[in-house]
Amino acid sequence: MPHTTSSDAIELDPISAALGNVLSLLRADDRGEVADYIPELSTADPSLAGLALASTNGRLYTAGDADSPFTIQSVSKPFVYAIALADHGLEGVLAHVGAEPSGEAFNAISLEPGTGRPANPMINAGAIVTTSLVIAESPTERFDRILGVLSAFAGRQLDVDERVFESERSTGDRNRALGYLMRSAGSLVSEVDDAVEVYFRQCAVLVTAKDLAVMGATLANNGVNPCTGDVVIDTTVAEQVLTLMATCGMYDFSGEWLLRIGLPAKSGVSGGILAVSPAQYGIGLFSPRLDERGNSVRGVEISRVLATRFALHAMHHTERTAPVVATTSVRADLSVVTVQGDIEFAAAERVLLVLDDVASGEATRPSVIVLDVERVTKCHPVAIALLDAMAARLRARHVSIVVADPLRRHIVPSASNVAASVDAAVAHADQLMHG
Ligand code: GLU
Image (cartoon, rainbow, N blue to C red; front, side):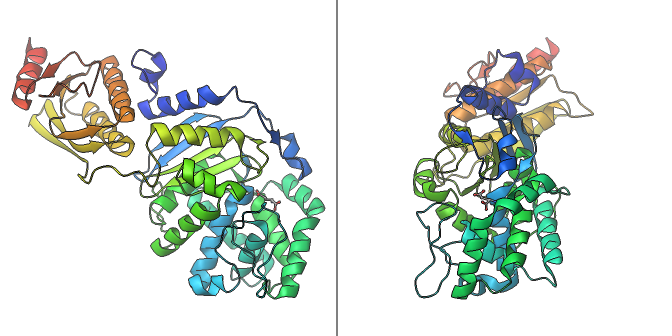
């Protein structure tokens, strides 16, 4: 939680400061082991820990090693599933890959009796079939298409880690075995080697926690990348992908993950986790040590803290009053920022952006802003902490906040200027400005 007295909270924006705080709580957790069944993965620095959050308004907040590259591994699966859905539609894809949580390990050899379909596209068997469904003239073209889409999701051109690719290719017999089984059962229609090679290459694409956050924000934003404005996939496909992530994304921990954290997510064996708060955020996490199910230990713990503190669980509902933030200019040098409704993390982020905008007003350079919270129905602790951190940040920039709060609910606890109405707050602001 950001605190007003910390110099970090003043230098950083309050949300990055809050993320840094959560990360620092969990840095010391050194449980788990770095994956080594793909030999090259074992060279990862186990101490790395990065966290990034991208909002659907295109803002990015980061903490720790959010720029450290790692191979995307299984986190590629939902995005390739998106391409297959775009190419064949849901029915066309369901004919080859199911949509049921398998309850088994990511590399399990279990196919649906009768049809030979793999249980879902988030386990290796399902992902290999999904990759083969991407329409292309050749395996090379298929991979280029996949890389193009992953890059569009991330908003930058991504590359492949050739060493990890070679390492997996030379040791990936279990995935080849899955391929042969599915080919004999009829669910894999392409050549095994072609499908598996493209799959290994897609797993070796390099990303950062920041990239995962933007990729998640694109899913959260109906398939439109909020940083570049590119339409990457359509809304229906984004919904379908998020649904499969919610039910099957975290290996055989998917049910408990949904119960505890409540967000569609996907993890990978290099230590990445992508979590999505639909309509609001993409969250990217990276820390290489894995638990026995193959999920990043610190990634899961950080997600748990974030979900609780930021009230992100998808089944959590605020009251129905839509949060509103509006600005009115009383005069050129004085604005009133009015906040209304239930303020939780997402609404608090909007208030912060509006306050920052008003405070940076090029022409006017205001020294006081009135924050009207009279019609705030509820303010979640994370919102109070963020607003307070923002007030401290503004004070450091010589901008005071006068809070219009007739009920004295301490929505900005450190505020020394609190008035009983907007009029009284404006009068108080005048006094501060003109003595
Ligand atoms: N390339 C890895 C494999 O197929 C991906 C596994 C994962 O991240 O779960 O074994």
